Each structure stands twice: as structure tokens, then as C-alpha cells.
Length: 379
Image 1 (cartoon, rainbow, N blue to C red):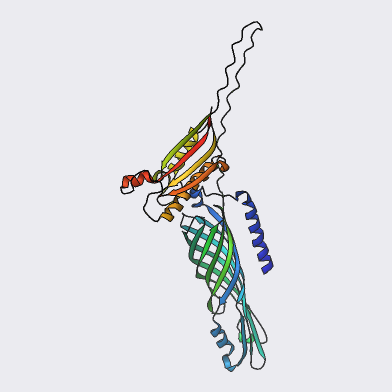
Image 2 (tube, one colour):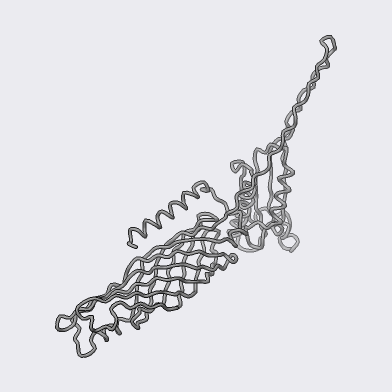
């Protein structure tokens, strides 16, 4: 496959995936359980560099007293890989894939105008264990280690073919591979990867070496759950107006009850809603927010404000960012349940608004909290 075809294939895959995510431009991460156990597919393309045993090749060319006039190598090409993986948890995944590392060659001339040129290509399958360390909600670094089963196909041509036993040898070998990289998540489903990998290979004529693949690619997780909308509240039936005789006296109509402005505020313990030092909602936290939404049925909410708070342990700047991330996570869940995102605002107060003494464990527990304030009207 030529570079143009490979680039076109990867470009088409990338455009299709990005287009499928266009509707999720304001994507929020609200399905960590799914993301940490999902199947995914991906593809990378980039440059390969080979490091094969040139010294042994030269020794073979100069055997039987022949002199070497020139020896040049072509050790760069375009490579790609396609793979499928299974996320075991937040930190580990297993990947299986197919790779094509391209072709590499050499050209040589020896005494008496003898020429011998060779070319070797490598393609095969691999199985890797991938370990990932999140740096933030979107960025993470990862490393991989595994095995590759590659087929090496070698071709020789020139007027010194008598120097080789077989002009078209091939060989299959199981070798190790390893790599590392950086991943950026556009959403819970789509991510961009940049990575470096080293494949140990054999070239079918007794030489061993390495091929490095420097690549970028896209990863897409399959089966993302759809957001669950809030069930609409059935409107009350219209009142039945009785028909009376014209002569009957009519009592004065009762005026409609006015809308009453109300403000409701709920406070949740951070430990009950989130895991330690995390902005990912626990199932108990989701259940608490579901109860809040049930209480708000029948109320026209104009504004909802989610505010995160922390205790005084740790740096103030870190606590402020953590409180804001938790407030944003609460907003994301409310929006996933059908609340208008334009009506929900977030704030992170960090440790600046304690409600109890931070010198005691009991006081610090009270200060680690998230509040949701709703301003609207009820009939």
C-alpha cells in the first residue's frame, strides 16, 4: 500500500469519526464506568526506521575475497497499524492488531562491477498489554509491552545473485515489542494518540534487528451510552366548566393563584458524592442528584448553581481546581438528565467558605461539600 493510499485511508477514518462527534462539541465525561470497560478500535500511521545488522551484510558481500566498492541503505519508510482493544479498568487494557512496517533495502557494488541489491519488508500481528496513567481528565501517558509475530519477505537482485543461496527468502518469527505514548481525549469515545514503538524482527537471511514506528492515530470506544432524558411531567387536566341556567346567579370567579418565587438549596457531602480526590460521580452521588430532580418536579427552574467546596488540607490553588471540577461534574450529570445547560452555572470556592472549623476531622468533613441552589417559581 502506497503512502498516499495509507494517508487517505487514515484520513477517511479520522473524518468519519470526527464528524460523528460533531454533535458532542460540548462533550462532558459522565460515563466513567462504561469508558473504563469498553471495547475500542483504532488506527495509526507514521514513519518507520529500521536498524538491521549491516556489519553482517557487508561481511557476507566481501566473502571469498571480493572487495566492496559502495554500500548504501534505505532504512526509512511509511508504516501503519490497525487494532482492537478491551479496557480492563481505568489503568490497563489489552490490544491485538495488524501492522505493516514498510520495506527497507540496501544497494552494493563490489569488485569486478558486481552489484547486489536487497529489500526486506515486515508485516504481522501483535498482542500487547497497555498501562495508562491519567494526567488530567483528557490527557494521559501510556506504555505498552507485548509480542509480535512478523513475516519477513526479502528480495535480492543484481548480477551477484550467486552470492546468495535463495533470492526470495521469507521467514516468520515471534519477537518482543514495546512502546510508549501520549493520549488526548476529545470525548469519552474519541481520542488522539501519538506514540513510539520498537518491534524486534528477523530479516529471513539470519540478521536480527529493530524497527521503530513513530505514529499518530485515532482511538474510538464502541457503544457509548446515550444520555437518559428526564421523563416529562404530564400536564394537569383542564378544569371542567359547568353549564348553568342563564337565570342562576353566578358567583364571582376565583382569581388565578400567582406564581410564587422560590429558592431551594441542597448540600451534599463530598465523600458521599465523589471518590477521594476525584471529580467522578459515585453511584450514590447520582442517586442523590436523582432525588433532588424528583423534588424539583413541578417547579420552573430559572437558574441552577452548583458550587464545590473543600477543606483546608493541601494547596489552595489545587483545592480551588478540585472544587470547580466537582461542580462541573454535577452540572454534567444534571444536563445528562435533561436540565437545560444554559440555566446551570458552576463555581469552585475551594477552601474559602468553610462552615466548620478545619482544625478538627469533623469540621473538615463538613467543609468538603457540594451545594446545588435552584431559583425558580412554583404555583
